[in-house]
Image 1 (cartoon, rainbow, N blue to C red):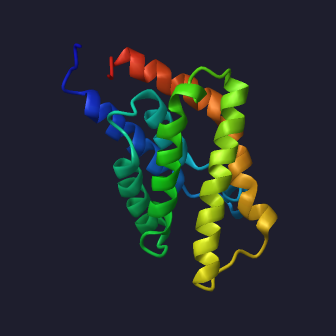
Image 2 (cartoon, helix red, strand yellow; image 1 turned 120 degrees about the vertical axis):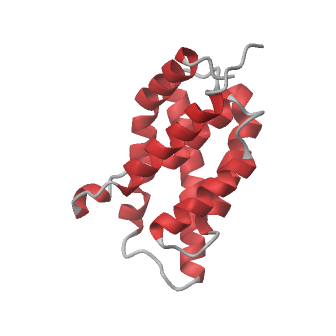
Length: 162
């Protein structure tokens, strides 16, 4: 197997772009539609390279996301670690699905992630004002999955990340 030194940097760069897209200032109405960029990148790498990206990376990504959102430390970490666990467990099945079925799977996994974060927020006394608007990003994440998947696959193949 031919691995080049920049393999890990490509993975790190994709997470950095996801964090930048997460922190990008948007109008309030458009911010409600923001997909879970970090979760999408994490799920892609867990499906493509489950031996390199897994629960530990999900936990670290979530901790950094907690800092970005100024949230209770560990709430997104727990959600992304669970998301990574399910993705690594199901990766052999999901990878062979057509893109529309992958999007449905991503939608369900993001619903689990959002429900877990919602549960922690509710336990700490910070429930969202509207459940509908809270769950919209799960839908937009599923809609964004096909182009993000194709772009990430092109990047992974172009840089020979293995």
